[in-house]
Image (cartoon, rainbow, N blue to C red; front, side, top):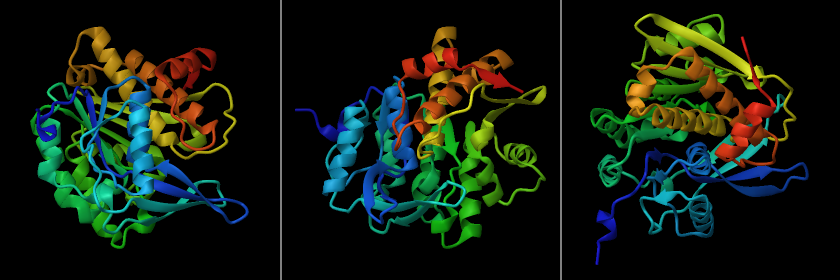
Length: 340
């Protein structure tokens, strides 16, 4: 009988980072438990868009952990650690700020999704011979977990896989903000593609009078060829770097979006962007790294339009409900992106 630890995974994308339960504060004071975590949401969103996706972190055997596992499996995600671990599930209490943005308090000591090692992450990726891309970010960028994720990122870049880092910052839970910033920047040194929001750039304390200026500053400090900058209700931008310099493309949907809930919007945006990139590579008969290196404005327009549609479909529903590729593609036709 085959040893489960030696079984191979048929995956194109691997994700590493938090899977947790969002306890969402209701108007009457109740806490409503929802499956969540930025990397967990991204993982489900990638799989729903048709990407064979491998989730690398373990999940708890407690009630919440079993629910998290069922959610991934139901969306077609492969689990690198199918057997549950004894550690408990991570929790987050989620409210809304006066501006309507999610406000988080995390409970993440001795939890299941942090029970990983760099060697274990590398070994799991080695068991996926068709793996082309790895993604991490959000709480995985905590300085306390640098010994787990930084060596893994270095190994994946050395092995020729595209590295995607989402600088989705959670400053409210990081005790040492300067150390957190340093570790985020260290992780970005391995990135081929970076995603950040205008709020993330402010937390990183980058110089510049505008989000665009701070984004240029950040991109210049990394080896990344492409950066996705989300701008909330103002849409998003792509910064593409090649031998000719850095090229900007900015867009928003041509019609207002009826926002119900913004949780998971950035994760669905990134999933849409990455799926469009990989599908475009397939259509062109290119490896993903080659596709990223040869992006032109027309391809970037298609990537950005699909990413915006993916995010809009998410925010129009309660909770993070990622759309399929077909649903997001239909929206790009029904509500075209308006490019600046």
